[in-house]
Amino acid sequence: MRVNVEPGKIDKALRVLKRKMQNEGIIREMRSRERYEKPSEKKRRKEAEAVRRHRKALRKREERERAR
Image (cartoon, rainbow, N blue to C red):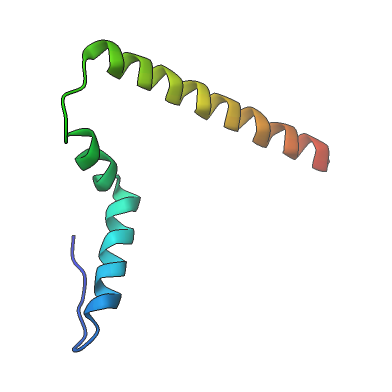
């Protein structure tokens, strides 16, 4: 990952770096590796994420159908 730093604009470069890291999922992975997660907790978290994604897809589908 590369971020161009212009002279005197370190704050802007940091914001760009943080945004890129967030889009790549690096921040989420770093947080998940901060502590050990039991396999049962991991399974429960993944199932909850799947349910969340499914509900979001259903909401979007309903919105598209209403717009027709």
